[in-house]
Amino acid sequence: MIRFDNVTKAYPDGTVAVDRLSLEAPTGKITVLVGPSGCGKTTSMRMVNRLIEPTSGTITLGGQPVSGTDATELRRKIGYVIQHAGLFPHKNVADNVMALPRLLGLGRREARTRALELLERVGLGPQFADRYPWQLSGGQQQRVGVARALAADPPYLLMDEPFSAVDPVVRAQLQEEFLRLQREIGKTIVLVTHDIDEALKLGDQVAVLREGGRLAQAAAPAELLARPADAFVAGFVGRDRGYRALGFAGTGDGVIPAAEPAVVLGATRAEAEAAALDGWILVTAPGGEPIGWAALDRLDGDRVTEQDLNLSATTARTDGTLRELLDAALSSPSGRGVLVDAEGHLAGTVSPTAVARAIEEAASVTAPAGAIAGSAVESAAGVTAGSVEPAAGSAAEAPAGSHL
Ligand SMILES: Nc1ncnc2c1ncn2[C@@H]1O[C@H](COP(=O)(O)OP(=O)(O)O)[C@@H](O)[C@H]1O
Ligand SMILES: [Mg+2]
Image (spheres, rainbow, N blue to C red):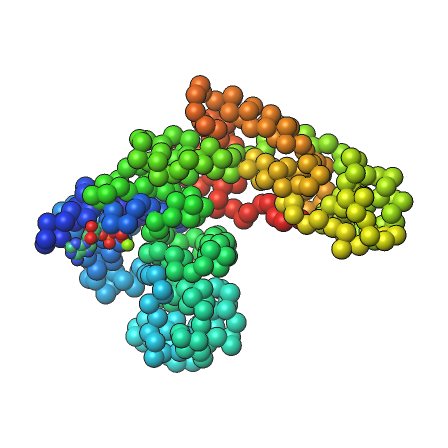
């Protein structure tokens, strides 16, 4: 656990970058510091590995005050990833990754083997080992940065805007991979971002900071969405928070999928016509996995082929979230949202009206006014007030829904 106890940092020019911060980053979990630029995120983080010394207050790592720990010793226990990866430009990838263990005396051959393992962990093949940073894309550089931070197998990781410099598509991919990696390695992580969506997606706990380096609220994502502590937090988590909260609410028992007739790709026109409802027929793979919808009046030949398919719809898993369900219903050209079971097989369809009813039900289980707040979200996501335990089926899980 990393613990901030009443920590303040005033720079010599009088700027108070961090103001009496008290916060716990629990062991094995991801704590995200989020807030507008200049609110003291980087300063907070750099006080943990003693790149910056606090003016007052204490920071402890597993109960040990960092101020009493030799800085070099301390940094061996703390991996550090920064924006743009901060790789050594004159070293190749393998040497970048292994710089610290080599300094600590690890032999060349062992270092090479370990570098290849680490690169594989972050999704880079052995062919990257001998490249130089300038030969890599931004996303690849960030992966190398993560591999390097993990090289000495530290229990703690500090990550400062690790995904901010890459384009949105690559960023989403890196986020997913990062969550998958964390499920394997279970490090105690503090991650800084200015992006609230990233914070809600990655954090087991999200700490919202405001200008002047003050902590506005620290809570699990569902809790933050359901009960922002004040107007600043409410504004920062944004206008879509009701909709976002759906991402943490399970579909529960609220939705019973209707049976949906389907044909296998390659079926005849006659078969499709016989099975179709309202002019649309759902088409599956031979194994029963939905692929897409076909409009009867636009079928091209005698058989249903891939050219006939509308692929715009997303699917929701029966054990997924209300947000996926709503997406599935709204993205379906037939107006019927496709549900699949854990194996990806067709489980039926739901109408937008049925989803709306389920949402209403989830909201009505809860307190009076407000968004999809309160106990429905809590019970669905396994969150209790003040708890920072990861929510079952929360953002920490793999994305359940997928594209048809
Ligand atoms: N070395 C410094 N000297 C004076 N002020 C600084 C220094 N570093 C950062 N600051 C100021 O401290 C505040 C917090 O900075 P920082 O921690 O970098 O914020 P964030 O990472 O949230 O953008 C800002 O107002 C910034 O200008
Ligand atoms: Mg910063």
